[in-house]
Each structure stands twice: as structure tokens, then as C-alpha cells.
Length: 268
Length: 306
Image (cartoon, rainbow over all chains, first blue to last red; front, side):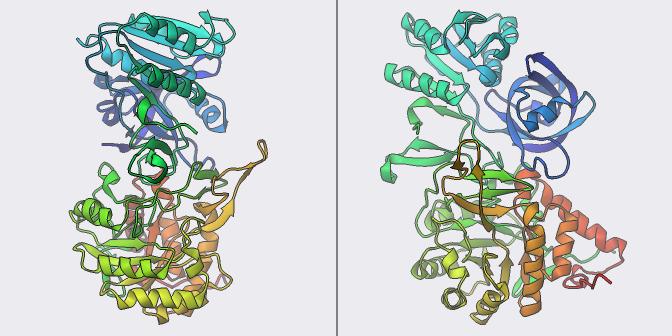
């Protein structure tokens, strides 16, 4: 159940070019947060910006009562957030949304496709999946435009999982996209499962590939989320619904998602 | 002694004057983690239509300076699913439930009034004659005094529940519409609904909303909404639920001073989910500091600047 907290900032440090790790003390959120869930953050005083923004939870330390968010400082909102220091407070609402759960009866590897700033929910998924009997093999495909845009590579390596890095320009890892790596990983695998988060074109490519190959796949979507709590209906995504005209319905990314089965999604 | 926060909206008695605005609170069940819904003066739920509505394509919302535009398109499960699936939860709380009803034709307004009249737990109907989004069509009723009179009169004739008319600010003279609604039997008036606006992305050269236009809400509309409430309070005796950009207790008190008997929190629910708790406490504190016995002591009591 989500709550609204003035959370104390424990750390807010730059990790890579413009990529920041924010650690917040919020025991009520840390106690319940799961992979795929997000917090809705309000930065600043007054009315600019007015609305909250969603950030996926990257790591959780329930015993310490804290959790991490990893974000790119790009627009006015996140640039402002990046200027905050340890000891400052930030208003957060969460944990919100559904979770990535490990798919059952998967003989092959669980493949986590993490594109750019989409890495956080998959990091938490990898962390929680480790040590579970159903996790026979875990492969993380960590991609970005360049080595400067890679997010959480060090964190994935620290977990001791198999990490395959790709960059569009070849500045780190394989010169190519996550799709090149994904085709290779699933090519020789018996019945794998795929979990993905990243930019929409990447998610669409992963989802359509998996649906075509009949590989079970779950993706985490990001849309504009005015309320984050499921009341405003402003963040809907199209899902298949045979009972509706034209065979689709709108469901809330914030409350019914952000994690969806690739098979149910319709891409515009 | 604690000040008395209770107010009356015609036959509807509320323990305090703080409500939720329709469309900003879903059907209440998402709020369990934030506070007990029983603290609210009343819950106004999202608009309900006769048939389910799928709503508009995305993008449906965009943030603007101190506000937001929305064009949701009245996405809702329809009145039957509302009664079967949403009302059981809402009945658990010690709080009146106001059901916002929307339609693009008079027959549907009649159907909704009749269908909801006997539903246990429904305390009042708020007739949405002011949805600004193209898909819902409701605004045509709210911009014409004759149509307003007809819709409100038809709903009035088909229910024993208190009838609240939710007015559009997108009119030349809102007092004229308010009078028509009261003459047709409205027990109370809700105002304002959102102001029609749009947003364009200069970079792409495109509208920012799939619907092109949307309803503007948030702090940027507060001065406009406050004036609308004051004008209507001068024109009619019916109690008013004031709303439009209320973000804290001070905003709420300003609406009460302007003549609203109650206030509704809208966009603020998205930003500060616990806003209602703070607004109720802040109104109480304001009255205590001034040694006022009742919130009714400030309703409509705005004084000239000098």
C-alpha cells in the first residue's frame, strides 16, 4: 500500500555522465518495494514543476530503511533533483505499480534486457531473483547509445550475474543493439524468459521479437503519469481486449502496470 | 472547544466542508494507504456514464505553467459495473458518496438518475453538464441555460437524492446558468469544472493532446474559479461547492469566504495525496485562531479591500 513521505536524502551522487544515484531514507517504502515498482517524486517548492515524476526503484535495503533510484539528469526536473544534497528532503509517494515476478517453469535462462535508464527495475529483479531455485541461469543484456549512457553495469557485475554489454557506437561491449545480443542468447537456449525495460522503440522491438518467437516476455512501460496512483487515467496504454470494439482497451500504466505481458500490449 | 466544521449542502449534511473533485479520486479504493476516507466531508467519484467508456487516445494530459490540461474522455466502467464493483467498497466508509453522472443526451441523464436513485450508499448526484472534452459532449448542456434547466429538471424529477449541478466556467455569464439550474431544482451547485485550453509543441509543430483541447486545472485557474464562485454566490441562494486550483487550507478558506459552503480538492490529489488531511486541519486551525465557533461563520464573508 503506497504512502506519502518526506524522505531524507542519504546520497545523491553522479555515477556516469549525467547519471545519478539517489538514496532515500523511507522505511515504509523500503519495507514493501518490489522490482518494477516506482516512486512518484516531487521536486521543488511552489508550482514549478507542479506534477510529480515517476522513478523506478533500483535497489532496496529494507533493514536500513532505504532505497535507491538511478536517474539521468536531463530536463529541468531531474537537473534540479541532481542539485540536492545529502540531508535534504524529497517528497515521495510509493511504492506504486505492479512488480516483475520471475516466470515459472523456465528451463533456460531468464534474460533481463536493460536499455539505458531502463536498467533500475531489472537490477532489483536480478538481485531478488538470485538464489531462488527457479533461477537456473540469469543473463543481463545491458545496452545504451554509448559507454557514457550505460546505467548500472557495475551493479549488475557486482551481483555476479552474466552481463552482456552493447553500445550503438561500440564504445563499450558489443558494437550493436540489445536485439543483436538477445537473438544470440535465445538462439541456443531452451525455453528462456525475457524481462525488459528501456526506451519505447527498444521495448517494442524486444516485445515483438519475443511474441513472434513465442518466448514469454514482460516489459515495463513508462508514460507520463500525472497521479501515479491510478485515479487520473492519464497514463493509459493499449492492451488487447476481445470484448471491446476494435479489440483493445486502455489500462493504467501506473496501476495495472508498469509491467505488462508482451502478448497483451498493442503498439501504435 | 473545537470549532464546528459541519456544513449543509441543501438536504445533505457534511461533517466538514472538504470534498474530492470528480475525476481526481477514482472510486476511492486507490487511497487506502493515504488516509481513512471517512475523514472527508464527502467523496465525489469519477464520472459514470450509462455504457462503459474507453476514453480518448494518448496523450491525454500535459503539464502547463502551474497547471495541467486533461482530455481523459470520461473513461469509466459504466453505471452497472460502478454499482456492482465500486459501490461495495465506498459503502464501508462513514462518508457520503456523491456520484458524478455524465451523458451526451438527455435520455442517458434520466436513465442514470433513475438507476442510481435506489442504490444504497449513494448520497447525492452531481450532474456533469460541463465536461469540456469533445468525446463526452456534456458541455453543450452546461453552456445553455435552457438545456441546463431541462437536464437538471429531468434528473430532479427522477430521483429523491440531492441534485448538484456541476457548472462549466466556459460561458459568458455563469450566474445565468446557475440560476437556471437552481430554478430547475438543483439543491446545490459545483463550480468550476475545468477551463478549455490547449497546448502546442513548438519543436514538433503538433498539439500536445490527442484530443487537441483539454480541461485546464490546477493553481493557475484559482483566481478565475474564485471569481466564478463569488459571482454565483451573489446570484443564487443555493449552496456552492467551490473548486479550481485549491492546493492548501488557505486556498480553501478563500473559496469559503467567496461564498462556497464546501470545497473540492482536485488536481492537488495527484501532487499531494494527503492534501485533504492538511486542508481539514488547516481550516480548523484558522477558525480556532479567530475564535470562531463554526465554519459557517466565514462562508461568504469576504470584505472589500479597503
